[in-house]
Length: 546
Image 1 (cartoon, rainbow, N blue to C red):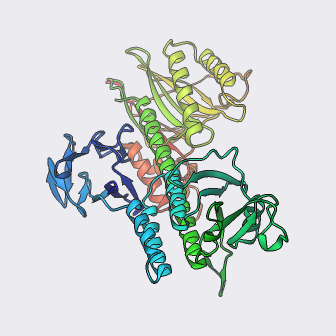
Image 2 (image 1 turned 135 degrees about the horizontal axis):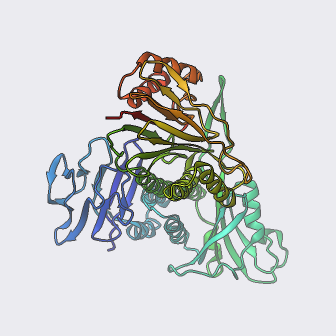
Image 3 (image 1 turned 180 degrees about the vertical axis):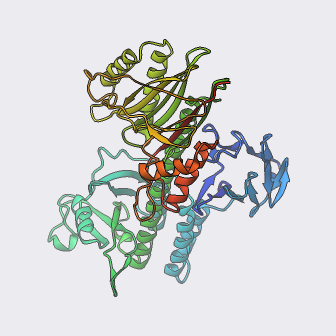
């Protein structure tokens, strides 16, 4: 007798649960995308563990992971699995897995359904087995698998010749998704003939129909005085989700049940046998069928969201990899930097351009918008700006060339503000500010100044001109370059941190070191429990000639 596949019950850190069947062995687990089960946690190894099949059943084997593999709280290299075993991948607050061994599945239940009809109380037997079948269907991971199992179950239950399954698509249109014949053979949906009038009536009324219909006219036999053609028995059942209870003020309102599809069964050779079916059995089957279809759809949506989440995780790693791996050190400057996207990827970045032993270029940029589009433009801008700046052209020419490039290759609604400054060993600081926040200069005597300049952002106007400004730094002076995520940080009351508060905080700091981390801590303390509203980037350049 066929047996069901073993499976893993997967619970993530948020408490969400799903089931994954071990469709093949070895079955691999890890955070890299080529695993059979991808677990999105950077602390889990790329290829963490695998489940193997052997003569005794199934065993889990650690694949040299960093934090180890645990079964029932004991670290293992390899161990035989049994139903109920709890698996963790070395991280307590991450995914928790439960192993469930092979289970008896649909073919055995269908065999029992066939035998149930011979019992003294077939309706009660049918209902009990339907509930068992519904539990089994809930574990099927793919929508197509659910539809096939549901239709085959209905054919066995009713002894019909053909089964058709219609689903309501997103636009509300009813579409024929699957057709099966008795014995498990697929039927071509394009050329099938069926009672469209009966399907339409059931879809409109939400009530099942069990009747004999004349094939030639499509009319019920009790409406036909003379039957001129063959007769087919029809069972047409709406697949409806359970009605929901909603609270409106002090009133409880029950919403109408939602139809997710229609199950259509017919038979020509044994037409009259279909009309004797128990209505309660059909209604139970319809409700359970709608539930498992909806669960399969939600499961597919969850898997798609996980795939997108993983792609964002990869994009985040790539974006982080574009930042300087190590900040350069010299005998005439010190650098501190931090960037914090408000989503997994963001539109802020900072960069350092090495212009020789006596000069250093520092960039902070902020692309309009958030998320993936902003991150893609930021990566493009960073590459273009760094490539041109490395040639050390005049600052005016640098910005003209990069602006022309950005205008030609980005949508008109997107732009980027950017500050670029070049520090020389003698303290000279030339810069261009293209629509960015004006940096602060924290002087060695404790006073705070602005580096003011006015230019259009990059990508806004192809013919824009850019004015070069200059300043002179004294030993111990610090330039604070930041994105608008610092002054526009909001607390729970939507009050902004603001540039005035930032300047006052810098004045209190005086000539302290570790300014970057202290400013970020001050912003986070102000924001409190409010979510981060924008990408935040901060670079502190300290002039420190030996």
